[in-house]
Image 1 (tube, one colour):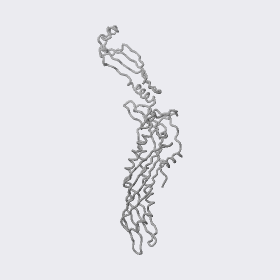
Image 2 (cartoon, helix red, strand yellow; image 1 turned 120 degrees about the vertical axis):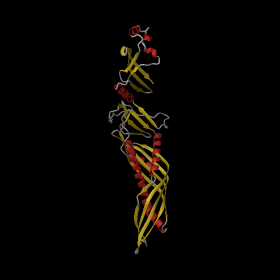
Image 3 (cartoon, rainbow, N blue to C red; image 1 turned 90 degrees about the horizontal axis):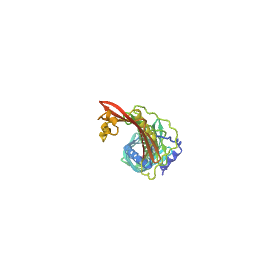
Image 4 (tube, rainbow, N blue to C red; image 1 turned 45 degrees about the vertical axis):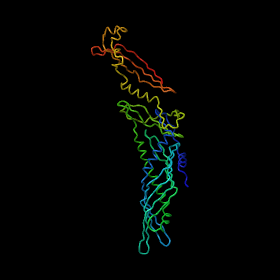
Length: 386
């Protein structure tokens, strides 16, 4: 009975270098244990599908048999046809995650042959065989680092262990069966274990390529785009993984560049009763302030109001008793409101509340024979709290 792979891989990971402390990002995404379990189930299911059919390299061996002489034996066409996953686990350690799966059974098929020289003739025989694997464990530990604003995935440890191997030979001379099984069982075991390990490594490379090709910015429109480059290395905790993202808005035509962030003391804590939640996202107030600054700089935080629900208010006639001079100078003229932000709206996030402030200039204009004439201006400060 071999050492279970999950505890072994966790132990090996604990001896790896400890990740540096995370910096204070503008967006933090925390995947909880429930989210990790969900992702693990998807990965294990996909891996089980891609592992079959799996071809194993041919095995050749020569051995000396009393009264027979040197026999050259070959196991060829070894193919893993099916496997059944009974359970799987995912654990978070200081430098990454460890995924281990237990398989109830796996089925393989192969061809066998042998030949030896007897006096002046060559004796040979061949047949096929079925292999039943009872109990198999597969495990992989993966680490992630921030590489120029993208995630770089690396495999720290990967292994496969097969418990019991039952080989059934068909065809040929029965006297050869036990000889073949004694000579090839360990070789078949190690070859299959190595082939499965190599296949998992190939899958990890594809996952690494996928993570590396994630976009570094997401365009909101022709003005603003969110900088989604990763900041610092992922933070691996006892039952969660935190990813820190720049998160600030930049001009759509600006190339993103990874930022060097100062270390902070902000820690993201999961609320009580949140064990079933898969993903938590926290946003810094700078995310909102960066997008408001972009739209303000682009001149988009202003609007000319021509129509309102009470349209008669946008006519000098409705103001003839309150402001008679206006009506006297511009009788029955339509009016426009030019509403403009005089500074970028600001957002402040405090414990339990969000405050927002918008400073506006409202200019009242009169349409006098097609010409826009400003007649009044006022400054307004809007404060909102939720």
